[in-house]
Length: 309
Image (cartoon, rainbow, N blue to C red):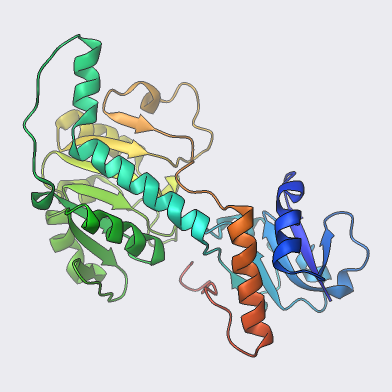
């Protein structure tokens, strides 16, 4: 039985050495140069072409190369009975923690203001707010959110987390559900969005939500562009309800060259680079999950499509 590597671009040369090292002796077939789809037991995929997965009669699991699963919607013929495993791996998690920490500190230390002062050749120290009096709210308190929270707590920032269902973490004020959202937002001076994109969360970063944040709050969106209502963000920045924003994700991508975000003085843009899957550590994660399955244990991080993540 073999593993099928199925990607929309030229990723195979970077991935294959690491997959082979993590699972020595396993046959790996690379789409479209496939000898026998009947031998495929597991598929490692990124935006799979429609209809390929259903041609694998012995397929037991699909491993997403990304943390998100929206790319699997490009295959409407994906066999619904086959479990899909989202990517959880050290490289991706570390990258997201780095990005969130960097952007939180950027806004906490008012680096946009200093950048503007530099452009005017203005020497003006600004008041410093102690970290332990600043609250960062992480909206989407799954594995990535909790890892980011751990780093921020280590920097003595106050951290609050919000999730759909109850979570708990030492040193973090945890909120959940609709009942806990307003209280969470009211204390989030820097709001970090790490939510999965579902029908329930699409457009959640909107004028109504911004109005519930402390005046002058900052927004960091490292989740998906579909979470943000762009016009509402611009209005909130222009009114002063929001002080600034860091955006890594957009809809569509790449961001059009004439988009107003490019030139807005209170927006920091990055081109969807907050966290990327690293083949070396991702291959180890896939190998460990396959080993669990073959020991008769359940896969880790199986997607619940009814929830959208």
